[in-house]
Image 1 (cartoon, helix red, strand yellow):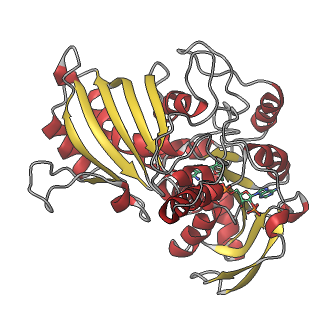
Image 2 (cartoon, protein in one colour):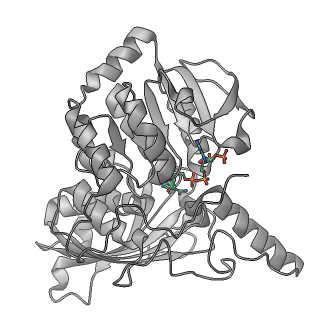
Length: 400
Ligand SMILES: NC(=O)c1ccc[n+]([C@@H]2O[C@H](COP(=O)([O-])OP(=O)(O)OC[C@H]3O[C@@H](n4cnc5c(N)ncnc54)[C@H](OP(=O)(O)O)[C@@H]3O)[C@@H](O)[C@H]2O)c1
């Protein structure tokens, strides 16, 4: 059996920097970035041309048996992604298992065998959609890029490399076209936050954010979901709880204010992603984000409390008007109505779909100038929009 991933490990580029600085890229990752820089900036027409010439792309999903990878495969089917061949790669654990591909407009239905993710398994592939851990990404993708593949990766390994665009299509789609072989998919809580925040930032300027996240168990992958189900089952049956596995403490009936490893200032790696990745995606290098990430006993869909400090006044009514037509956003903000018409975003309603719901929009009474402070609450399916759908959307930008 594969060794369990350590969900509390810091990513390899989470250095102990001053809070205002962006982490330095060092060591193996610096070498990867230098190799990417030496490659010509990609011509997105290349993937388009291959798809047109060959009747679709040869696509590999790495981590296809995990929470994100399985959803990616569903997205490829749902969105009729142009496929000539689909390779599904996992670990030794699932090598040889068979997946029942239901088919889409370009690739007919039929069984697809899972294979172990190796360099050989990626030979000749056009596009890799990465849904595996950082060490696998670092091991497999640079060589595949050298051989001509384009990678859209979900791990955090490459996100802050200077020659890797970090893309949320609703925010910075144009960045994707400057890739040198790898495009990174941002952290899930960062995507869910930025989809509604970006249109407000464009209108009123954004100087800082205070964010508290309420992150679902499935954010820790397949094992996170299994552990929560096992704990809830034990509680329901009055049996002893299983020992903590994926999470450091019991999650059922509890909240855990730790996601990722702690740095010297008391922030976790997950919390720093909101600032580091937010700066890169929105092109706001001075943005300051104070974040607290909390794991909650919800199966799917992260929720976030977000307080914005703006450069210019923006009323809640104006914010609602902007968000009502913002791409990727669903305005759900009817707090004054009587139930069941009273509506605000909740994970149970935002799971298994791609929009980020936003509501509870109000002035921030703690702001020195409340006209320049806004509070909001958002919720979105982090396996879909926070990972799989966002990845497939990026791939579509390059192909269509
Ligand atoms: N879960 C989320 O909400 C979320 C959101 C955004 C980003 N991400 C990121 O997406 C990635 C996948 O996360 P997940 O939640 O889907 O994790 P997961 O459910 O634990 O799945 C991990 C996947 O990696 C595969 N794997 C392990 N060793 C491999 C190898 N040597 N070669 C190829 N594949 C291998 C596993 O295969 P087996 O099943 O065969 O062991 C499985 O398919 C991670 O980098 C994570 O940080 C996750």
